[in-house]
Length: 444
Image 1 (cartoon, rainbow, N blue to C red):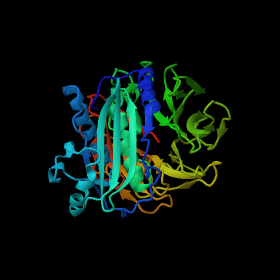
Image 2 (image 1 turned 180 degrees about the horizontal axis):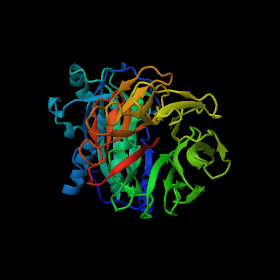
Image 3 (image 1 turned 45 degrees about the horizontal axis):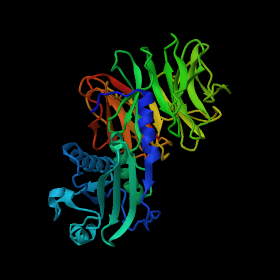
Image 4 (image 1 turned 60 degrees about the vertical axis):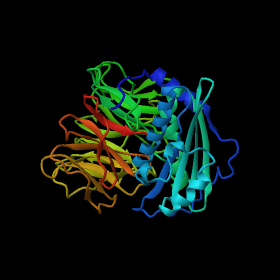
């Protein structure tokens, strides 16, 4: 984790609100609404892109540093998207940070000869106490502007403004939502307890969600990104809560004596499925986010846990020991048609998470004593192992674009959060704050 100055939820939401309210489109951009792109990207082929501009902002060394930061953050965001090759600025025919708006036309022929497909030109300026970020995206071969955006706000929102620009670039070139503006909810021992925090996708700007100095587990984002469901031992029983991130209001929605754990939201946000102690077993239940409409889905003396909805909301994947060992099962939303999914990953398969694209289910297996992350198709075919270190790799969570997987690993001793692409490549550490960080969930 790069930043350890944790904001309170109230302050963090205030900063976020400033940014959202001040985000503006450029006034005149003919191609602004156009995202039919002639750049053809095959599935495994990356788009070569250049990032230029961000000349030093006038106003002293701190202002100049903001421009440098903006360019670096944008390059990192595009690299982390997993679909771009960022051209090294040293290969460009000009000083990258000296390019101004309007000068890109003279640069495009040279970029075309370098087989660069797209270029982003950025600029920072001041407007009173506000910082203004402008970004323009060009398709190199045709010299056509694909997008122009302007964002304005408090200088503290610089990272968020750049993240929004990065997601705009991804959207204009692929037609799909980017991950740079997404956030991650996770459990950390940073204050000595097990608290839930939220941070940017790149581990900056963590802020505390719970703060009750108790045990808080399994945060899960609602589909609109406005609420988080989680389990807390705050009142000495593992109860299920939902917190509204815009208002700070939290509500206890299930407090049956015993377990009320492992929530997962339905795709329409109208239901949560979770595990609750029931007789001699632990079974799956549906409940509305306001705590009404409790409905039992599974029955029996076994342990059914870790549910995850299919993107169409018609099926649920979950973990059960009903066959004698923990394995992955599927069932229809009514709790019917239960069938076992995993057979070939030893005697232990847990923590299933359905891909937002619907074509894969990530889960944790233990083929040889340590835990690793696997993928399998919902029909039981296509088993693939993604991690293979001698330590444990667990708790997978998909990014909203279905191209990345967040997970917990002990490969360096302590539990920390890592990210990899969905084919297992580019695995890299995310949290580095010297504390235990785990049980993460990636926002929509």
